[in-house]
Length: 177
Image 1: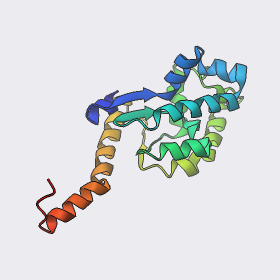
Image 2 (image 1 turned 180 degrees about the vertical axis):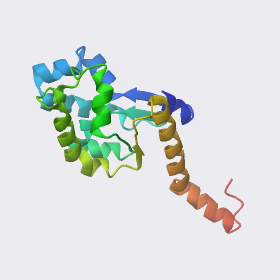
Image 3 (image 1 turned 60 degrees about the vertical axis):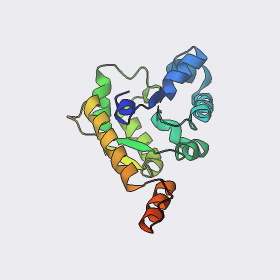
């Protein structure tokens, strides 16, 4: 929510929380009972329902990019990649464990995480904004970096109507208010 308020009265939606609320079960339970493919279908349905919202920050799980249709929907907004080295992710998961991370239920979770990140990197690298998360950064510092970079991105990429208005005003067309 720090990001959504930092952007100026945006709503915040977390697709994983919505999935758990809509299904009445946790994500690990969905993976266990239905499998990853079923989870990805549910995830896609949730994204269908939220991707067109305006003035909204949508937080997703990292695997959402695996389906092309999801990636297309994400690109209707500004996509932010939180680029966190796998070692940092694993250290941050140590306190809470990996039980709630179904894809990391392997003999070597760190290697699995490295493999997942490598598989997804092509899509991740197409994000509009990339935040390189470092060891010392807490969630507030990451959120502040996201807000700053989003503002910079928006300033550097104004909507077409703003560019047309500026051009009209530069040409002396004062009727554009």
